[in-house]
Length: 254
Image (cartoon, rainbow, N blue to C red; front, top):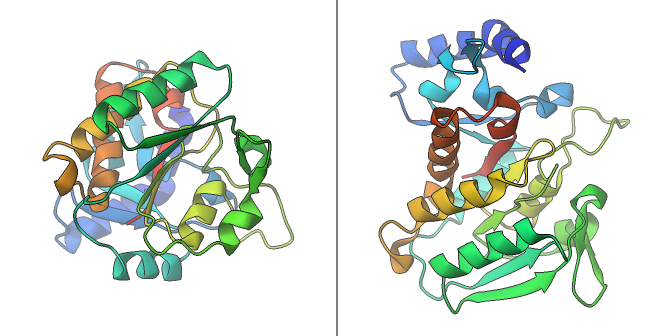
């Protein structure tokens, strides 16, 4: 992973970072990646030079807060309809049946947002959809065809939720579960590029929601979600979590 991240930094991301600095793009501000083809499967947000212990020497994580978008039009649509405030907030939590770590994440979220959580059981991220408690499948196709004008945030704490589906006849089109959620109306999505460690999910969720709710439930703003992911993974870096574990988490949308 260290070699991959250094190659990404030297060949692609460092020139971009230098160009942004020349444009006086402030350190710590947002950058949106819109990669195509196989580049979509790589952690551009984590590009940099690391030592043999996985400590960042120089790279993108210390410069900017990264987000991804499958298309520019979907990002423009999300930004045009964004709202501020969390009044009337409702949350649907879907946990993997009989998986302790997943149930633990739901319990943690309920502690942050009490009396607003409806829980389903069972999910199938590998088959690009959700299997609900009544055994009905909410597929990627169903999600993309839905219209959810008030949907704000989807936290997909499951493996491969932001991974490209497969090689296809249109390799420049990025189709992921996270992208499908954005297409149907969700403005911000948290996902993973590959398999995540079970122990990392609760840690990331706790730090993410603490930042999102730092000003109270009524002041929660979905536009803070990219920074929340950035700070959560930064804390994982400082805790010396291995590169392949924290780099899997990405933010999609506004």
